[in-house]
Length: 553
Image (cartoon, rainbow, N blue to C red; front, side, top):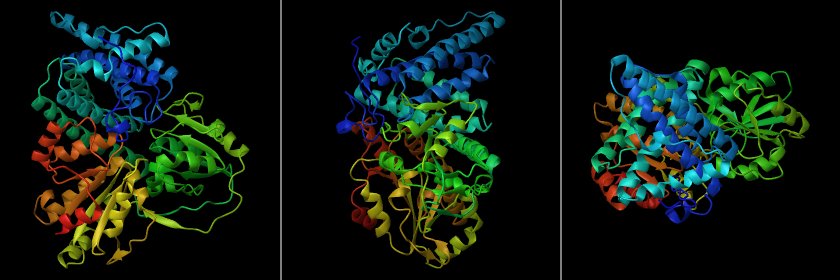
């Protein structure tokens, strides 16, 4: 087997839409890429034993949590630090051995002989970091292309990337105390399947849809975790202009980190701002009760280098979305959870944010208030279904002609202005639902109202696709039809693996006619795309004018 320096095409911005081979568009270098490949390989070994142990009635909570944390660490823009990846690899070895002992012990109890496993179960960590990098290059994506067609490898990656996205949501839910044993069982079974030497197209497509089903279950878990901890989202006006004073900016997705930071900054005189996917946090009663959670600063993740450099306080990155920090804010940016960048100070699992607070107090802060401007958030399914009767009557009266779900991951690639142009071209008698950071392309524009209902409804974070699904299901029930029969169109943007998981969920639910952009995944080969088109009529975006004409007739 020949080692390769690097090959990665798991995100939308992959080089030339074929694969990053020298350095990732995200910023990861070949060494980091190799360590991530090795971590996925090692985690498959853990899962193979954990799957078999669970079938015999044995499980270990720490093994379950490790599997999702390891997968989450390899999501785009999460862990760029070779030292932390080495730590995860050492953990993988220990948890693999623990899972093997569980399995073999269960076999002995039954008087059975354990299955002799190979592949990732036989991996042993090298002693030095550079040797681990070498091991990673031997198990890269290209190593699996030996003997498998490009179509099969692409389908394997579709399943794996979806599973990585689900792992991110599962980790957020577990952090807030929400877990399900059948969810962990599905992770292990899926990873075990991905080690099979000769998978079939139908099997892989079946697993892709099963990952979509798993993601729906996990998004429900995360909804219960978020609302159980912080209350149900409420429509809320959020300030988007600065307030005078010392400040901390919180980016990423982790509500628990924000909650603890708010608690620790009470009475310090420090104002806390959200950024990126943290914007919806202002809608949760137990978070917005803090008066020093004063607003949202900036836009989506890809603008962080410019926005963080201009922010006069400390910055906390809680989950994926980090980019290589610029020198002018390197000393005041911090990471927590699984996100990491070499040389950036990391806040451990005990969530002691004193270094962040000290950095904020040492920074100048905002010198004065800017004129107040606000935007609305908090239209999760609880809020929307609370006025469902008004929405239904407006549809029946012809006041609302069509619903558009326009959202997803934002990115820096050209072509994403499509989503701004599309929403601006949507007729005034249509409602727009949005979620995730893709909304920053248009969420500060004025769209007006229909009968007192805002035309732009911000459903929340990317995981709040669960709310969008609940809204669509409720409308379908009210009109006694299927979701595909509703006057509802989904126009989605994607960037990384959580978007893949959500797409698989929509396909699992049988939702057709999804428009996806700004371009289709590089790992979805033409024959695989043909299958998706045939079964689900999934299609790439064209121009706003063409797509609106087709949708509205």
